[in-house]
Length: 166
Image 1 (tube, rainbow, N blue to C red):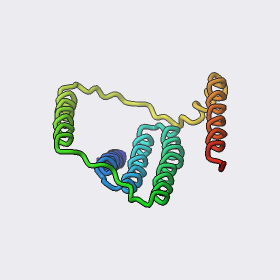
Image 2 (cartoon, one colour):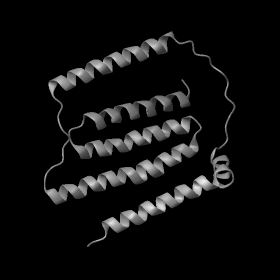
Image 3 (cartoon, rainbow, N blue to C red):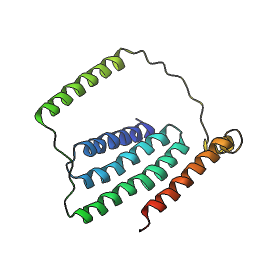
């Protein structure tokens, strides 16, 4: 096995294990911190796919923005209510139903994966996608880029307006 294969298995296992912790943890703070490692594993998989722009976006937006927002939201609401925040427990019927459904989907995917003929093709090396994406955003898709920036500006102003004290 080469280093890329080892890195793929590492990031794949990291994503799956911490994704399971996110789903099955009863403490919402454990779920939030496990989500950090899940996002990091996905960013690592993006790097292995030569999608460096998506990897950096994953780290900056999801880890740097959304996850921090979730953690702050949980920490601030816990102090306001004084109640320990935990996720709800599933009943036995719900647990059995989701277990059966997950098993059926997993078996179906394994059958499809094992019966498919996979054709391998040599992929040319990609240097970087950041320059191409930057050029496209500032030439061909400038209107959409500016519309998205205006939408984000309006959202920030709206959030500041809602958050200010009466």
